[in-house]
Every structure is written in C-alpha cells, then in structure tokens.
Length: 471
Image 1: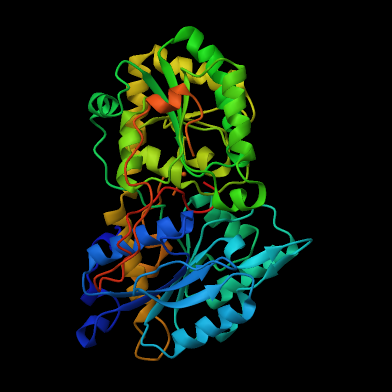
Image 2: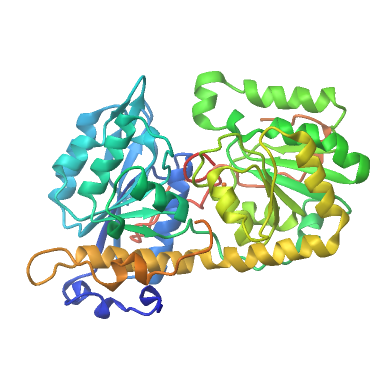
C-alpha cells in the first residue's frame, strides 16, 4: 500500500493550509536540555528534525523540572512545570491554551508525570482536563501487565489525545489489546536515530588510541537495570579467546540514581573489574556525551551489547542508535529487542547469562562473514529510522491534527491513518576507574553549554546520550 506519509506536502494534508495564514506552532511538553535526561535528548532531536523538515515552524517548550532544580534554559522554554506538583501541570495547560500554539506534542514517561507508590498517582490528569489544544502524545513506556491505576492513566491519555505515537508494533498491539485504546488513533513511528554511514571503524579506533583492539560497547546512562555486571563477567571467557578484546562502558551514572544512592553501583562495577583482573579489558568513559561522540564510539565498536534486565522494556534509544549505525548487536530479550533484532538483525541471549553473552561475542568475533551479515541486516533496518524521515512523518502528523476540517472536527486524513503508514518489521538506548580507563581517549566538551536557540525553538546545546525512557 502506498505510504502517503512520504508523499504528502503541507498543502496536500487536509482541506486547508495552516501555513498559508501563518507558520505552524508546536509546543513540546517534555524535559529539555541542559537537563540530563533521555526524554530531553529525544525531544531535542525531534525538534531539530521537525525544524529541518520545515524551517518555518515555530517551536516552544513547557519544560519539566525536577523538584528543587533550576536549569539555564534558552528562550525556547516559555513555560515550566515542576514535577510532583499537579497544579503546575494544570497551570501550564492554561498558559498553552492562552497562546497561539496550534498543536501540543507531549512526551510521556511515567516518572515525569506522577508518583509511584502502591498505585500510580497520575499528575498529568489536571493537564489533560484543562488543555484545549490538539494533542499528540508519544508514549515512551507501555507496561505489558499494568495495574488498574496505570491502565486508567494511559486510557485518559488515549481519550484526550488526537493521536498516540508508539515506537514499536509491540507497543501498538498492547495499547489496543491490553489498554483498549482506539487503534485508529495509534501511529507507529520509530525512535529516531542520527543518519550514519557505517564506515570508519579503523579511523575511530585510531582516534581513541585503541588500534588493534576488538571493541565491545554499551552506552547510555548507567544504572543497575542495565545488567552491565553480566557483560563484565562474560569478558573472562571472551578474553580467553580474543586477548585484545575491550569492553567499553560509555556514559555517566543516571542522575536520579546518583541522587538516591550516589555512585554505589558504579563503584561495584569498578570493584568487579579489579577482582577479576580485567583492567586491560574493561574501561569506563564516565561522561555525558554529545550525539557526535556517541556515534564515534559506535563506529569504533565491533559489537554492541544491551544486557538489560527488564523484560518489559518497550523502547531503547541505545539499541535504535546501534541499529542505525549498522552494528552487530547482542541483547537480552526485552520487548523492544525481540522485535528489533528479529530476522537475523542481531543475537538474543537469556537474561543474566554471562555464559551466553560470552558465547555470542565470541561467535561474532570468530566469524568475519557472520559479523558482516549482522551489520548489513542491522543497517538495512536501522536507516529507515533516521531523523530526517522521522521528522517528516511527525511534522505531517502534527499538521493533520492541527488543521480543522470545515465542519470543525479535527482531521483524520491520510497522514493520520495508521494503515497508510509503512509497517516496519520491527522497532521503533568521575574520575578514572582503572588504568584501562585512563588509556581511553576521553571526549572533550562533556558538559553541555547553556541552551540557546537563535529563534529556532531548538535548544542549541548538542544532543546528549541518555535515551527515551529506561535506556
């Protein structure tokens, strides 16, 4: 079936042309750089992709702040929301209603819009009850077996949104079958990734002074849900077969974990490396990286690993990045990975199995042809998720819900039809700990500058690592 989303122009969407009167105005409700948060990274990249698709669009933000924190935002942030204060969400909706915004893009992760206790206390409800603008909600987490409070929170979002964006077919099926959402409102648009040509591995290894090493890597915000200790233990067996192998763990500790527990988990990883005498084979890059630096580390890598522990993880930005860069990927079988790595796009291993992780890494490093086939399959799939394509599709969706029909109802035309969109086969990621870490070329400019926009509505701070939702 024809993919109308790739052929429609702004004047072809719906019966009118919003841009003929004035540029489309989009408000993002999300965290925003320089806050170190995966959702902030994602939304900043999305804003940049939408702006590239149509430079005339006007972008603004309602930025979500942690309780007690202040961030030096740029002028793109017109409204601020304080987490854990439901009245703050309602006030933001009232202010957006009074603005000239045409459509609202809300990036939803449960922790940003409520508090977990015995039930989920939904702080988004006052916002939804108050907002009078067309709403497109992107769900970064979809719990497969929800409590009644979670189910009701998602149902409210479904009822109040003109469109719901899921990043995987699995998530779309859950929203229909488990949550009872109207399937005609749900669109599958994958997690965007930077457009990357999968070449330059030797050059990147030289840049990081890692010539002759076989690089296994994991990047993203570090926390215990990542299961990094299992890959560290697997390196005992990997090194026995490939003495030049090096496992790079790239990224800072998750800020929320640091607030709760300091660097205890990272320290446990350091001690595990030392206890197993793996200082030459495991290294840490403890930095919050720019998008360019993430790509460079990926390009240097021979194998990418996500040894994550949560079987219900529905979206992983780091996995999406690795596929987009054409990497040979090994993963535990969480929901996103099972879908994304199907049909020969990667290797799945059991949760908490250092033996299977080691065997999979060795199988790839032993067989250049097998490795090349995995890389080709991953790239063929991942390049469809490049931000220019995702930005165009999201812009078409925003336009279609913003433009009213002549009878006053919101448009539900070709660009909104899930059936008209291509169904992807899968998917939608302090100091040196050891001598090995000191030998890894640390990236420069690890601290993002104050966000500026120069009128673009896109934070000028470079995209950071950290991904949507649990990465």
